Amino acid sequence: MDQLGDDDQVSMTVENREILFSSDSEVESPNPMLNCHFRSLKRNGIIKLEERDQEHDLIKAGFLSGMGQLGNEIEVVAIHKNSRSTILGQARSESFSIYSEAMWKKCGGDANIKYAWIGSSKDEICKIISHGFSTIMEPKSGDCFGNGVHLYPRNIDGVFSAVEDENGLRHMLLCRVILGNTEVIEASSKQFQPTCQDFDSGVDNYFAPKTYIIWPSNMNSHILPIFLVSFKGPLLLGNSSKIKKIPLNPTPRIKFSNLLRVLSNFLHPSRMVLISKNYEDFQKNKISKMVFVQKLRQIAGDTSLLKSCHDIVSKH
Image 1: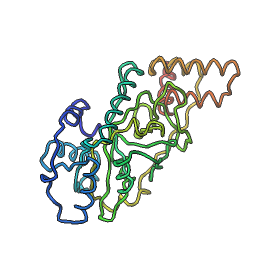
Image 2: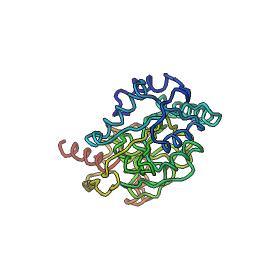
Image 3: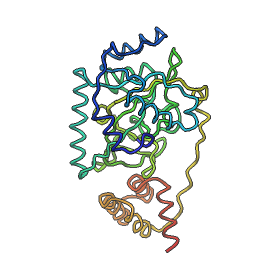
């Protein structure tokens, strides 16, 4: 979770400090409708963190910092924590731990677990907290990368998916996410599962991802909601069209042999084995050039990686 500082420090603070607050310790909001909404969360093991609590202040500071200049116009109204104290909450937590360990073994000691944000309507957030993920929600702004749950390393990239409720509040979940080995997913892709067993999840950009994609088969085992941030934002948040999209540069032409040589300096050997196998199939006319290029981009990364490789090759 970049905006909260060092991952190890955040994990230590967030994960190992299990402080449960009783309902008596919560300060009631002057708005009775807000009290009713927040009380409904308690039935699912969600507890309110009070101001000046270390976890509350850490999450609030990170949330506002991640918003950049927009953070000056945002009011954090409440922060709730998933105590995982209910039977279902404990089951989901144990399931997440089991899959984390399994991914750790599969990936040779790195399950690639990250913090990520997801925003939606109040009703959808409540459903996720109560029953887990049941439907695939397309992003309300930006590109859609396949049919999966879209989460964001930076909250500002997902804030436009947080829909204002009847109280003028928006809600975002901060989750722990098991990524494992990632592959790049093209915008507007219809993909709904990994291309092969070597991959576990998707990203929009291999080196600097702004979006994580968890496939439907893993959405209730690889995503664990930890905190719920409820906030009020400026009118700008109601108009996602004001987000400027920067088009990708076209991939430059380059000899495949040179490209593969350079890619070997960037990619894990397991990815190079896949690329080499597909290149061999292409040379033997088992697959077309178009299919090979598509597989190459899925395995190696997006056009920014291919462009950087071209620049290196051009200099040698």
